[in-house]
Length: 449
Image 1 (cartoon, rainbow, N blue to C red):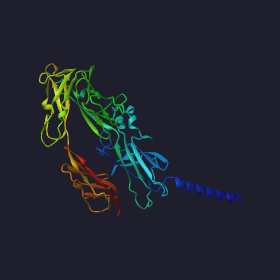
Image 2 (spheres, rainbow, N blue to C red):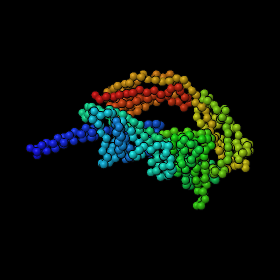
Image 3 (cartoon, helix red, strand yellow):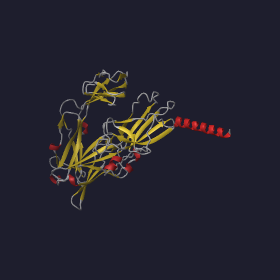
Image 4 (cartoon, helix red, strand yellow):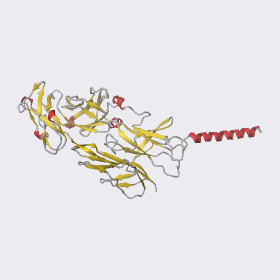
């Protein structure tokens, strides 16, 4: 009798253990599927070097549910169809949908993979050397914001729509393009041996703690930096040029106005190869005469002064305006270059390019959609949603936040592809105007037949 009692107790214990494991373990029925998209002006791009997902990049995926937080190592799979995230290797178990009694799950992600997401403000000491492709890629910090979804009680009989993780770039990208003037010594850009981005006086987030050695791509340089504002007249780009086997010269670059670097955006700097010792022209434009676009031709506002080592120079004696490399008269809004070249005793040693601006005109008006979301089923005919538009200028550009679900053409015609949800957005764009409100959107939900 005692032996039978022990057997029964052991069986009860085994059943109890199995129930506990079943209640709290990962649900083996349905792994969570992830698709990947990009947000911002660099949509569809990820790689700092070649502009695409290469496939196989390690990405951290974090899931939280209640007080639980788990980070797992996933990788990019772009072999076919939409870009996906899959477990990094066989040692990594995928995330599973929890039981119906569990709370909703919240998923986020970041690149490159680390147990804890790096803070942009403290990464600069870690990205000082971006001279190799590997280091350059590692500086390309990205993140996907939280996505929350509740458990689908009909699993596994009803397919679950993949969770879409939308990544955004956390760094700003600088492209440095050196060039030279034919009147100078004829510097050969193939002899450029190094490029650096120097620290600025900005206290919030400096470009770097010391200097960043940048990545060379063909005959230009690229670097990823934290978002920030570079003060005017700050020499933040430095190029080294080899004159011969033993000597080298240094070329420095600054902007005449402050420059704000925003996350996810690319900034191109054309750097004139003047040595630091010779870059002494200080040019001041008449900014009080900055024009605004009105459809008529505008002339550059003129020069207040050109100085060299504190001395005020005389036009056509000490310097001239290089009309062949300057934009002096134009109609459209934008920023244009005026190049000042030394003559006489300053010939061949001083060249300075400054910029003048035609401001965009402003138009009142806005665009809007009806606030009601639209629901469709797979197989429905293409459709358009009426856009109210009282803006007189510009063209309307349409985009879909999830082209796996639906695409939209240049006329706003939406074509449905798969079940899921997305946002259709219309944006009025014009190079010469700003608007009160130039964006409108509506939500589209597509269900299975």
